Amino acid sequence: MNIHRRHASALVAALGLALALPASADVLANINSRKKLRVATDMGIPPFGMLDGSLQPTGSDVEVARALAADWGVEVEFINTTGPTRIPNVNTDKADVVISSLSVTEERAKVVDFTKPYSFIRTTVIAPVADKSVRDWGDLKGKSIAVVRSTMQDVELTARASALGINVVRFDDDATVITAALSGQATYVGLGDPQMKAINQRAGAKPFEAKLVIKQFPIAMGVKKGEPALLAKLNEWIAVNAKSGKLNALYRKHHGVDVPAELLQP
Image 1 (cartoon, rainbow, N blue to C red):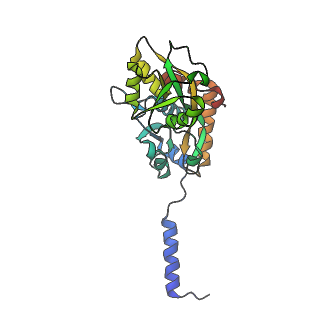
Image 2 (image 1 turned 45 degrees about the horizontal axis):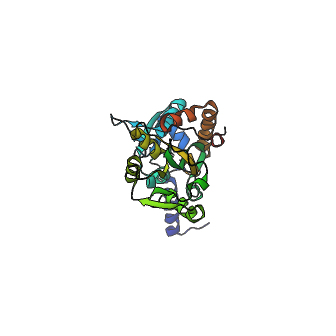
Image 3 (image 1 turned 60 degrees about the vertical axis):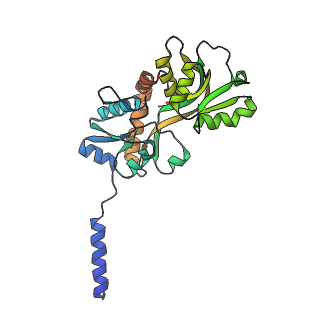
């Protein structure tokens, strides 16, 4: 078969390029080879991830990552991230796995593979423990609920406001809502569990508690699509530690509540 010299040169160049391109990555093999697990974790969302007084990582997600690495016999390296960069970090190979309060949503599932849930986040209507007037949603009729503007709590409660007969009062940030609760300006507040914990750290003898659940989301680890071996091994680890109670113990240590049993099915 005759091949024109120009075509032959192009074929050689194409083959060279193909050989130069890296093969499809096997993230689990890379973890085992380097003896290091790179974990994308946001250190700015206590109590999931934060820095302690010595500027060392701590929090429920941090402890999960450390336990995982220890069981696998590898070192853990935290890749500090923010909410928007969690998934890009695994999809650009800067991290091997996201362990960072990553709630499971349909949109995210289009660009990352989720493990089984290992944790959860919920938002609730909270009020002082001493307030015994609210036992169900009907008890909120005529009451005002403080929220942070444009949060999921705002969206959910605003959608229900007319039917429930409630007044949604919006503040600009968590710190302002927390101050309103502690000062008595707001008796009923729509916040996530982490913010309730922040309130109770300062509430002294007048603590708050969750009265009604607005919504809760399972939290899972995220990995780059096309990594079945890594996904399977992570799911195996989660199943073992869900059954043993370790995952719930780590969550309760930092959040003060249990992970719903139905979310931690081995």
